[in-house]
Image (cartoon, rainbow, N blue to C red; front, top):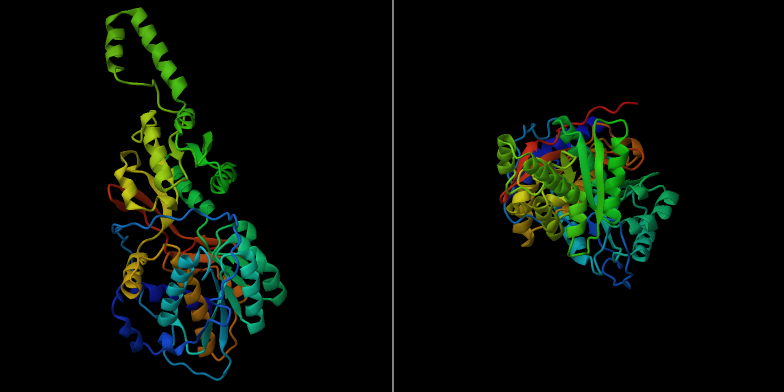
Length: 475
């Protein structure tokens, strides 16, 4: 079952990019059913306003949506529906119920609505006739999430998708576990994962592991880290410190900066080791002048216009920041002689914006992010249907709803009860979605196949494509 499921999702997404503006193609396949045949319940509390509670969440900073097209990587497409039977036999009348927890009111309602839009597309594309997506509003708060989860437990759902924030995930976890319902959350905070709760958000830990592993394969052994002094930055640093134990790279220099401080001159000079390197240049010049011979005079002429004597004591520097913050740090690093021609600039998916390539210091940098191969087509389709460019996070809603619907439809075709057990959800072969291959682990973590990308002026190029399959797990 799990092998067939993984093959199906891979095959389906291989044709997704060719279906923009041609939704009628779905009726050709007897296994694809229009969303109008699928019941989406909103319930009496789906749009109810709940008092907003301000919460602090350990989520990854949102990535600015690229305005210019990103070149998709070329991938080998497999035959769609290769291993799927085309004749459905239904014996059981039981419907599959999947709960969907979203912030449809409160200050995050725009994101919640975008996630719901993506889920509707997934329903249209892959759901069967006996699949109900039961939507509940969390209002973006732990209290709202707990109340919404109570409603889903009453509905006797088979699986829960969402909520969005780590604090909301923590709020629904006791109810989910006591009811034996597994949860596919959109959080990226691994602290809330485990015992039937899975985090599918793109975690900073796996992004940084991927880009550092690739850098090490290219001969980079000494790395500096210049991170924001917040939860996100400290998660990056902690992941790097763990990764460095027994590996083939070392953290040569570590610095933090206040992400709210507009003037980071002193912090950048420190991570660049600028003062010491500048003083070393002055001392060297003084020695050459004191010698006064012809060779020394030639050496002095070669040093003209330089501010420092040697490069920093690292080959790459990681700056886990995005947007305006990154555009403040990168040119300062370059100004204080962290030359991108000598030191490779490394980042995370927060760099996934081609406009950042307009900053000369970032041209040629590397970062890890999901493949764009399917996302670009989906984004165009979403914009045609909803009149807006979707936030990048909506791929999580599409992939999780599609995954739940395919599992349910396969059970339906085999006349068996739907099974969202740990064994099914943690299929070691993984699944293929809009963001490429992904799989879930027993401890609740998710793992994704990420690409290595590089910024150029107004565009993003693929340095190393995302893997299309996973290395088998070792027991």
